[in-house]
Image (cartoon, rainbow, N blue to C red; front, top):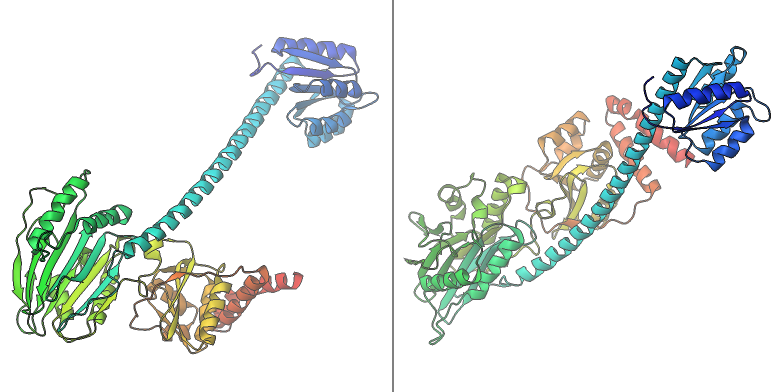
Length: 577
């Protein structure tokens, strides 16, 4: 006789003492650590209440005072982990089957054979072991889930704190940028700055040093985010542009050599460096001296003649304390342009200074600010969203015209390139002088549709045109599609940057009016922010789902059949509500 998988505590319940002794002896031989006996159901109840560690109960059905079935029913409620085996005479077979239904593991005919008893007990205990192990695993899983949930809450809190810190850092970093261009007779200057994230490593300035000299510089720190931003702050901190004794403007090479030495002392970590270009303009003569520390080529676009690329005159800053920098000198004549930029403009590899920039930067009398916005738009289109880098552009025109600095406070890329909501559905909003703009990001689903529709209606009621931007929209569910169809019906709604897969959805659902209102040319988005939507009630959400699907159903017989069940379900819920 083999031993049991565990040494259980057993209870034998039978009004026949002979049967009890036989079972007691058999269970002892099987390896039970102890065997208790009870002459009927009431005595068994008392024992089970006293001993909570009973693993196995073998009970007869027909007993005085409290029979086996009632005992089983009570026992399953008292301790569901106890294993029950029913003993039945031939004339009580139906009762034994009922016992199985109530939760008994097995039943045996009386008197049971030893081999049969061993198999039944062994199987019962193995099942109990499996059930207990399953319960333990479930408990471990619940505990793990609770720990993961707590960790997730902690990470969300830290993420929110980091987000607030980044937003604060962005405000501080923007304070380092020039707020307005200085007046320069006979010249105008335009600048455009866009960080790839909340904070970036780009920096620029245009500063009048005295009555005739103006300094222009641009820096680009390696990497992204906070590290690059701090490196650009160090550059700004250590930049010295005048001789400390005479007060005269320093030459570009001397400026870069001095800041390079300071950075070498201040930054001990390897792999941190900046590229920079520094130019000193004599506004009276048009003479310009320029030094470049590993920076992308500066373009000199003359009013007539070939474009000149002014390449680096020394290595990037922070690589070598002994670095020396040369200077280039050029003469700026009326109608000429000088263009400086950071490498975020050419990160995709699809644009080249010679072929693309020069063509857009002619003629020199063109609108400089609009040209910079066009260059930025082309770069963002060519680059993948996750690869977008900081971009800074600076254009000096040799002719009198209003200057402008655009640091992104009223004109910036969509929020996804900075906050990365990824695939989750987010609605962003912004506005221009004549339009309200709503942008759908990620997977647009029915959840925010009521708030999205409400915001769109407010724009239209204000008298402005509504522009829907779908450049970062991966997909739309039927509620979003129906809502867009309703909005376009007002006649004052346009769409831009619609992905091919989304446009295919429009065509499949016969949304011809929507397709007709897709703009062939997209406009640069203003500063966008997540829609601060009021809480949406269940009734509002249900109403939006219903109206959106009714709009789609009206477009074709196929749509009517496709959305019939949805409409019936929503109307049913509305009626029951």
